[in-house]
Length: 251
Image 1 (cartoon, rainbow, N blue to C red):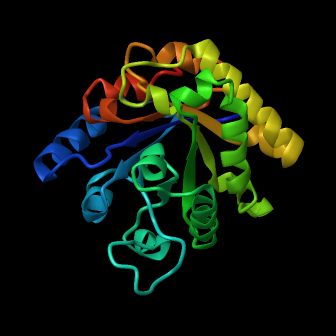
Image 2: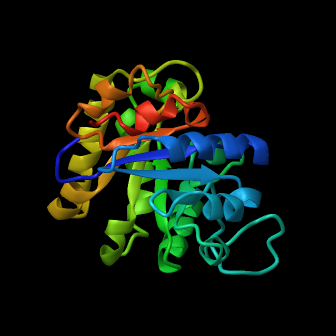
């Protein structure tokens, strides 16, 4: 992590937790201690967004895990950025690989979602990442640049302060396999260079690019040492007390 970019950790709870389990998570997060120089955001199921926002201190952000591309209408089962903002949550995770690969979301749809969420005043964590067969075929750059372009094309120039990009190689999510710090740094560096070439040097320098994919209390510090890795997006490990070590990985 470069010192000019604030360390960022997102805890993606996915479709996990009931009130009792959420209370336990809130308890260990509140007890901390948390690095005051790190930014922490928890990604929560929609039915608990209001509950968690009321329970967590204001210093910890709350994110929805998805939203739709329009403000309202006949879209059964969807939630809008305006609804997320109305209950006090500040962030939304968009384009997670499970949204792409389980629910068939396209690059174009994710770009539209990012655009609308930013327009409605949310901060966004757009996710990109290649599958194992794409990496083995030498297509990592082709895939992640294409995914990134679909998102970047929909981000107004004055909204970049509200964007944190998450690189999550699909083959490392929930599999126990982790990209080595060097593998992750290589992709992060190329993503930052792509931003410099296609957006601006300023955006490339200030935008946080975080890593996701089986991040644990054991490997988080080595990842955090890499200059272009500005934090992590954490799944299952964010449900456990050891998550505190991941939040504090840059100390």
